[in-house]
Length: 441
Image (cartoon, rainbow, N blue to C red; front, side, top):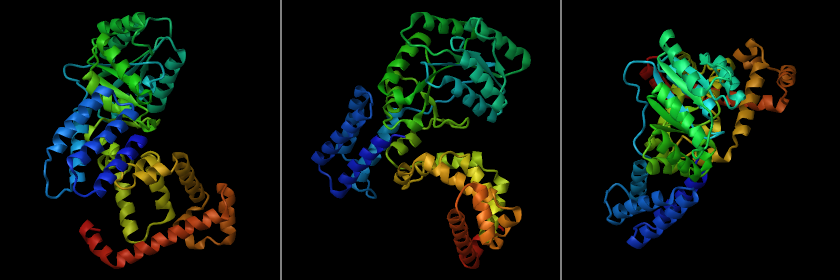
């Protein structure tokens, strides 16, 4: 996410930091580089112009903070103005009596159907009862896709085939929601271009029949500046209440994310950061600004961990780890929960100071390594997992054959595991005892 822009901004600020005291000329020269980096990232020209003007007015003035170097002060101002450009965090407006209607619109291929399912899952976790509506009758595969996703996620789907007009389908679904007690209706509409008058008129008819509380544009962040034009077109016809940016994990430029709120005035409410059903996050402008500047995003990492990990199981594992009683069975369980949080390379990018490592590791490489480790542990017997010391040469050969790996791979895993156990044993004998007491273990 934002790889190219983040790298360029970090390089600019690093050069500024080496100069020590900054003159007005230094600040202006640095901001010219920032301006160019933003334009190359496909940020709207007017947005860039206004952003640089605001930063320069504050930075040249200089707002002195004794604890910060001049370069750090400029970074602080850039961070704050970036947050201002991204706008306030948007939240769903679901006041009034249910059922509340959420209408999702957008271009072909923007990810509406999968986003409908992700949003349904996200809202169900918040205690709501959503009904998904397959109203994309122009693409039969979209109806089937939503039905399949609904079955996989245990979410109800209302569909009537491809012969019934979408406004009728949505009206029927609204009546069903009232009768069956669903408090949310999420409409999956067909993809269309904002200049297609007939298709846009159909969306206006859906809006008139269902009176949606939210009209959310699903926009592919990888389309760059065009996504901003699309948002403007849809907003003029329908009156958008929010934006959902998809494929943000694959966008190396990030211009659309920075531009859309400033140009349209419509708040970004969610961002899609992967293909998994859980890869939908609330939009936090401060966190996104930190990611763009290479500062990481610890809060998002914590939220992912809280959602993925069973707290009681994690507590038991922590107790065993600190007592040096952590075995390969425990390790396998933690590995399975870690995988729920997303690709390891993506997780590393959320940790301050580890962004570069995350960028250098291809997601498929880390996924393969994790799968290899899990396969090796799965090929062991329960007794071998609990007591790896009994794994002799013949057992290692059997484990390697069973996992499709080599004896060297098995040896490497066992060696790393022994080193971890040794380290934890030393911790438990020293300051680790104090830590255990603090935890009440």
